[in-house]
Length: 293
Ligand code: C2E
Ligand code: MG
Ligand code: MG
Ligand code: MG
Image (cartoon, rainbow, N blue to C red; front, side):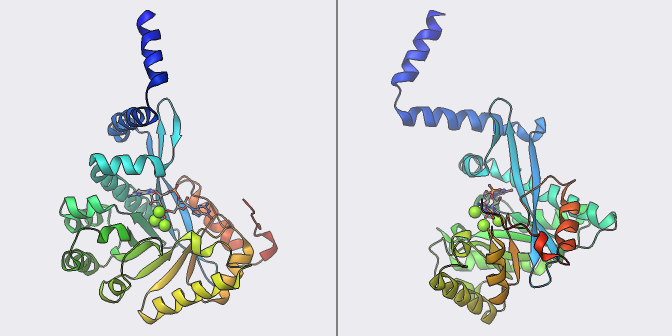
């Protein structure tokens, strides 16, 4: 008891950063066992083609339920997984899980839809990544063109364009699609876009928010869409929360949209039903919620 009180007191006076470090270590320790304990799950968010409003794919997003703290946001645990190197195992797990799931949907007779998987730089650099991807495709039997790998501009930090290009070209040769995620939030030169084999540009939510009311934002997004069109890439808009934003995205010729206006990320069992609901509501546009959250 006295020991406990002593420990408690030192915690009270511990600098905030020491507590933050302790919390990170604790999360890291639990995360290490997450795969074996079955506390890690992939959820799926619909990607909706414009103007048809057909669900053409899903993005797999990791969800983790901490044994004591409950659900922890990827924004909190992915950086911990990245700095500890755990991301290599977690990333491979989610890749295999998502490919398996997409294959299961095809086997169940559902329309062929792609699956997008996020890839951290550590995965890309720390192992023979294209061999791992190729093995997962062979093992799951998913047609390569139905897998999209999402990479962020953080990939470009500390590596030569030649090295990045070599791996991206090898992945592209497997037939998988490559997307540049969170476009516009990073610090890379636009020159990369002209030289690297990306198929898709995912425009960050900060560029989508406000396009219905602010002409300058609409112009900026229109410019980004024209740019990617010119470079032969398709554009996915992230984070549309309002029907008015979807209208503008459609007018601007955006290829695809992913956002709460259509669906949040959901467990695999709910995903086909969500897709059906989105596609059915095309016939009755008034059913599409004008979400304000
Ligand atoms: P991301 O890859 O850019 O994924 C999109 C994020 O935006 C997801 O957050 C999604 O839930 C959220 N989002 C989608 N539509 C809307 C919207 O309309 N409004 C708002 N407010 N948010 C929306 P989530 O699931 O929390 O994931 C956050 C980030 O964590 C992801 O950003 C990605 O960078 C990372 N992440 C998630 N799963 C994985 C994974 O399996 N591997 C890796 N390396 N990173 C992952
Ligand atoms: Mg992503
Ligand atoms: Mg993103
Ligand atoms: Mg992100």
